[in-house]
Length: 150
Image 1 (tube, rainbow, N blue to C red):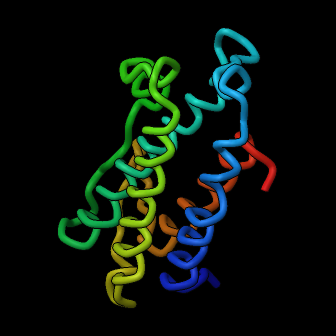
Image 2: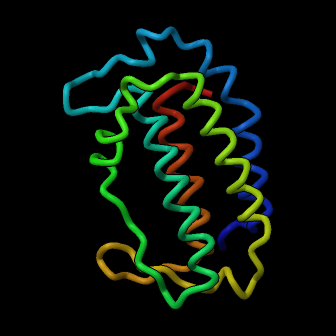
């Protein structure tokens, strides 16, 4: 059984309360360090989480309004063209917190009927909004643990 929208929203808000101060404790060199040219730095991971929030925002809203919209993105290209590696860390942190607080609000408003509505992934598979909100927070926590142990 998937968690309720309110419990997912509460988890996101908890992460928004907890992690910004932890992010700010990471030295700039460490935040920007790329373990391999083809791997993301912590800064790029945080940028990726902004992209994830933007795309999932589309899923959570359009999934309620449209008949199984197809919403996906090319994550590596999004990170590259937005040049997160050279972005201001304080701005990335602020944007991440703001966007996720908004998503927590959007998620908390999902009705039981709308949780059953579906979106399609890039392969055409249909998934419910209930699945997507749980998947979002799992994806978020996976990457946040790559940035900092919390």
